[in-house]
Length: 111
Image (tube, rainbow, N blue to C red; front, side):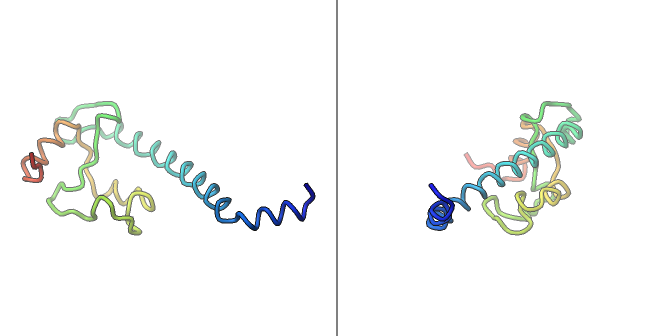
């Protein structure tokens, strides 16, 4: 395959090529965000029971003051993907048990 044929084939499939590059970039970015969030959660620990747990037990509580700053599905400029520090400044780290208790106390838990 010569150079012009390769360029023609690439032009024809630019969108899939871009999508592959964008997906690779997003995976890399997400992995970096996960590393930061995991380290932060383990460093802070649960603010309610003062327990030290692994990152997979600790959660970020967005409703500490009862005001929700964004919806879960919102991909606005202040979402976790675009600005993870925004989430860290406006959340509290709690373990799964304390988070469940907080949610029940606020009346958000419906069963």
